Image 1 (spheres, rainbow, N blue to C red):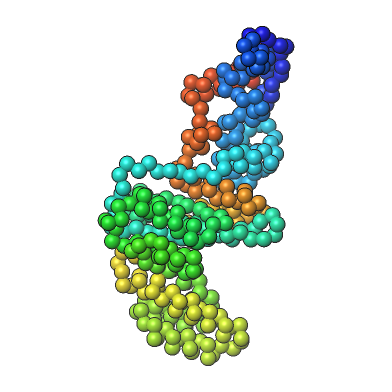
Image 2: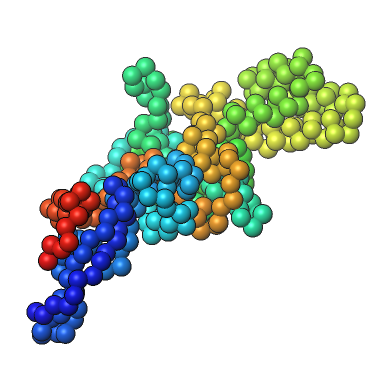
Amino acid sequence: MGSRKERQKKIVTMLGEIEYARTYYKSKKSGEYRYLLDEIIGISKDEKIDKEVKIKLVQNAINMSYKESSKKTCPEKLSRQTVFNAISHVGEVEVKREIKEKRKVRVLYIEVDEDHVALQNGKKEIPRFVYINEGRQSKNGRNELKNVYNKAYVGVEAEGIWIDVANYVYDNYEIESIEKIYIAGDGARWIKEGMEWISKAKFVLDRYHLNKYIIRETAKREEYRQKICGAINEGDKKALKEIFKELINIAETKAEKERAKEARRYILNNWEGIVIYKEDEDVIGCSAEEHISHVLSARLSSRTLGWSKEGLKIMSKLMVFSRNGGNLREISIYKEDVEVLKLKMFALIWFRFFRPVSLD
């Protein structure tokens, strides 16, 4: 194998930008030119940013802006586009649970909500979020969800969402052992559609949204708040209708009258999902609003951001990937042999601090 003159290589690492020289070799058999040093330490021909930097950029971007991620990751100033490229390179990852034996549970909970996110084109996108769990358990003095698994969808129709959720349930649980499945959410049509795809499923209305309607309607007439809550707690639909009839009759403005009608319609349309709290002891409160705020909204919609649809789709998947315990180093594009990784780290540190002319 012959060789050509030395050529410089620059690569951004966690220590900053490193420049080193390596020799360009030519194979006498194939005539192919190769940088043997790069191959030995695991750096590809066109690689300008080390994989460890890319991993850290993505990990940081899950919780902060692209600019903040760049600033926190390494000493070199990297552009927002560089961070986005690292995220795009990862793509739509998902933690695949290894199924050795299907789980046997008596009750399963599927809690659902959605977020509203601004896009760069001025439009809105609605990521939908589903988390499957086995109820609550006490751990270190706190209640937490048991064996929770998160899913996020952007641009997916209801049918596609529920087919995917149903596949997860049927793949991971022994259906025969499940007595009850609860689908909890705000009562949107796409959420209730889940009952068509998942057998044994019953709808449970999220208390957060119910309380929001009650509080908004009774903001100026607090004496009626207790009456509405009392009728709901007693499961007395007739009494509830009478209360709203009064509210509509005494409304002073058209807007006030419409709010009363809207609240009545919302409660009556979700009546079965409300009274189920009283009728079924296995029903627990839905924490979807709190959960989506913690997992998605804090990053996607609570700040003034403008996402591309593709960026939003990938980021939503990355966020639930992280929540599900995913490790970026275990996905194929970042997976490296341990010994090769050690050699690579040693070589980059050597280049950074000792700056040899060439190691070929």
